[in-house]
Length: 327
Image (cartoon, rainbow, N blue to C red; front, side, top):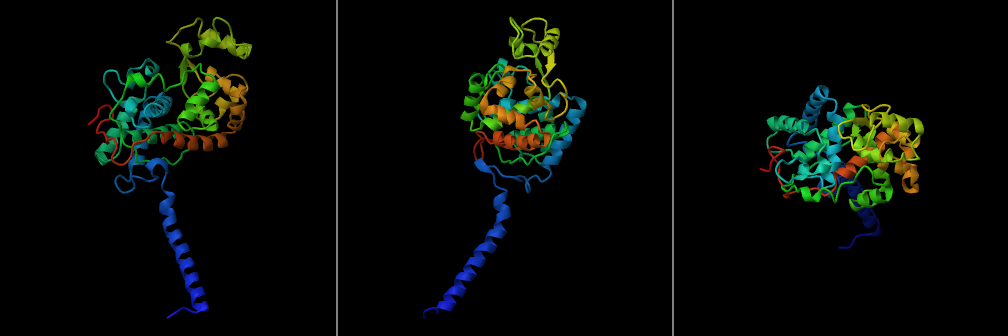
C-alpha cells in the first residue's frame, strides 16, 4: 500500500527529527575525539585521576627545584621533533637521543620519573610515558602562572632512540626565521604556532655559548647598547658554557607575555628569538603575543598541535613500566 503525500511528509519530518536527536546525543562523544588517534579524556575509565596524580607530583618536584619547570617544558620540544611525541628522549642507554651534545643541557627527567612512578602505583601498565610528559608539561606552565589547556591523550611509547637522528631534527639558538620555518613546517606546524611555542622562553635560562655569537667578535648591531653591555658583563668572552643568563630578563620564573615584549623592544636573547621580529612572516604573531591573555590561549593550542606530531597509538609502541627503559 502506498503512502499519501501527507504521510510521506510526516515520515520525512520524523526522520529529520531523529537525525537531529541522534546528532545531539553523540555530539559530546565526537567532541572528545582529537586528531591522530588521540582523545580528550582518554583515561576517564582506565585511570580517571591520572591528571591530578601527575599534577600533585609535578607540584612537589617544582617546589623542591624551580628549574624543573623550564626543564620539563623544553623536553616536550626535544622529544616531539625527533621521532614524534613517543618519549624516545626519555630512554637511557648508549647512543640514545640523550647522548647528543644538543641534548646535553636537558633536565627534568627525574620529575617525569617521579610522576610516572606515582601513576604506576594507582594505575599500573595503563598510562604511557609520552602522555605523562605531555600532562607534566601543561602542569609546569600552570605552576609558573600560565593557563591550563586540555591535553589529548592515547599516545604510546616508542622503543627506539637514536643519537644520530637528533642533529637533523632540532633547531639551534642561532637559526634564523627561514631555517626555523622550514623545520617547523616539515613537522606540520604553522609560522604562528612556531612563534607562539618560542614563548616557552619566557621561563628558564640559556648558557652564554648559545648567544655569544651576538657579542663576539662584534656586537650584533640590532642589540641595544645597554643590553649588549649587560650581556657582555655576564659573558666576558666567547665560549662560556657554565654561566646561565635569563631568557626573559624581566620575569624568568613567571610564564607570561614579557618574553614577546622583550623581543619587540629588541631584547630577545637568542638569534632565533630576535629574528622573528625582523621577518614579515612572523613579526605580526610576535606583536599579537605581547598580550598575556592572547598568548596564553595561543600557547595551549600550539602545544596541542606540537603534542600530536608523529604519535604512536592503538597497538603501536608500548606502555613502558619505567620511562628510562623499554619493557
